[in-house]
Image 1 (cartoon, helix red, strand yellow):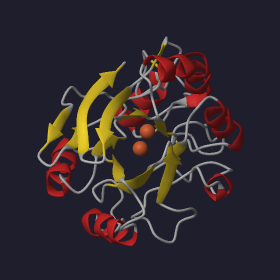
Image 2 (cartoon, protein in one colour):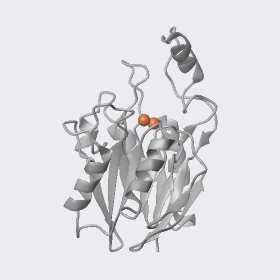
Image 3 (cartoon, protein in one colour):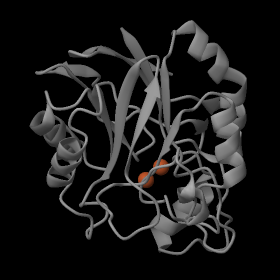
Image 4 (cartoon, protein in one colour):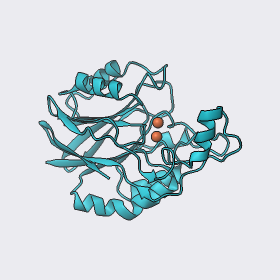
Length: 260
Ligand SMILES: [Fe+2]
Ligand SMILES: [Fe+2]
């Protein structure tokens, strides 16, 4: 049996620093073989409040602490390093956004197992994204015989959409793990065909704000459609980890549990 720790959207340097403290222990405690993390919210773009993205330095700190692969979402390309970070072989962005920097799928080979990871984004969130169903099927066909199993990071807002996608591809992949809302859901389950599922893995970042950010910016932006001069910054609360642990073998997923 192998174990994957999938870490939900990491927010800011605070989230990275917290993982530097805790991730080595989590890997040992849960006997983790593979670590994948969504990293679309690592940075803060000073020129564009509300935009995030990754940075080479923070990405490297995550790799150094045990993360095998970083996934993304609608913020993948934000910030000054949007192009540079996607040249790294351990960074992927949504596969169904062709024509953008980077690639949308990667294989992690460890301990004699080849685990394929596919990042997809909801067309409800990014209207010009390609059909995620067809995109996944094409990737599975191109990987035929090269991987022992595939996990999908499905980045989207709608629970209905994520659950429907998971049922549609159940039995074809080891796991469909939702990201983007930053709020961990309780619906961890093993679907027919041994596919693990959760609507959202949650967030790894400061609590007490709005999705890991200081609330004032969002309060004004949502209410007045303008930040009213309030800064876009990460929240100040205690850092929480939102993750799931998926146990699997060549036959499929056997268990999924929330880690918080
Ligand atoms: Fe997102
Ligand atoms: Fe996010």
